[in-house]
Image (cartoon, rainbow, N blue to C red; front, side):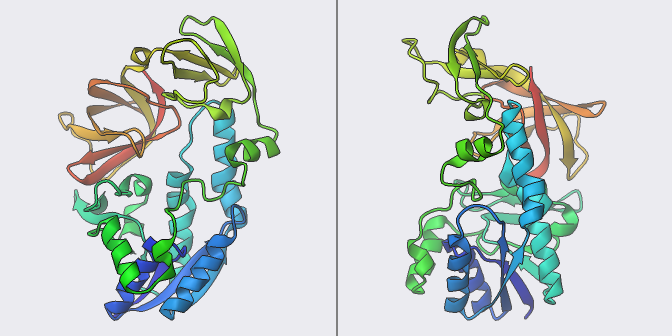
Length: 340
């Protein structure tokens, strides 16, 4: 049996992951990151989970690094009219690397998390694969992890459904069984992005324009909008209206009918590939975590990648992460720069 560190948040997923490893006979150490932002309840709940499972528990302070690598870039991106993906950035740039460094310091051979994901191989390299529970799979959020780090990761929940995980927690008498689902933006203050952006002096009001560029209203902050958004526009035009684009230079929001969102593809940058993309390969591309996959082809053009959908798609937002799957495996990813 091995000594394994578990990323412990106190939620049902990480708690059951730790329980499963304990039952398998491993020596388990709970590790929790102190982000210096968001509610402190997570630290208390993680400590309670560790006590219930009889685990050694360590808290690692990463507040300064979290501000530098995750919060500040996300706030600047929103203020510039892009839609960032702080969770995907955090997992690859901060969370998993920091946890693995701490795990090594405690003599652990592996790091486990409560993510719904599995490991597979592609082109001879370890890659992420979708979890058995396709509706809960979080491979998208982990797509930027390097292969060397994937070699050290364990996903105990990869073959389970959320209902099965909750049942294990209930039958084991764990307090986490009744906890609500954790939400994105674990670092946000009570006022959400409005409060965080406002504190930093990055709130940028500006005009709302129709598809032809005519001003039809005003908005209170560019960060409140994303491409494809319909709710919260503050408009009464008598017809369904969607955000078509954001102009960061002018803090302008352009809106129009749903059909104006349709695009044939996009340009991606800072791509990471687990296997050399084939000219004839057809990928299942997800442009957001909750988006349906869309068949596409990719082609490198200089430092960028041209992504052409097999059929037109909508709501492609600059700043978001595009993840390319082959079957259930993550073949690669890229940051969306511009749609066409």
